[in-house]
Image (cartoon, rainbow, N blue to C red; front, top):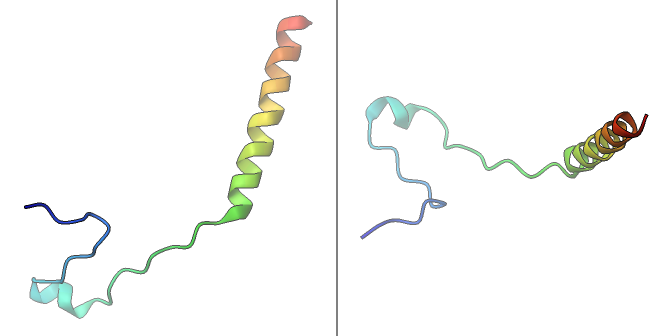
Length: 52
C-alpha cells in the first residue's frame, strides 16, 4: 500500500524531530507573469532574427 506523496510523513529520526515541520510555499503569481512576459519577448526576438 502506497501513501499519498502530498501527505507529510511524521519525523521518526530524533534529529528530525528537533526541526519544525516543513511549510508549504504558496505559489507566487508574480513569477508566472514574469515568466510569460520573458517567453513572449524571447519568441518575438527569435522570429525577428529569422526574418531579418
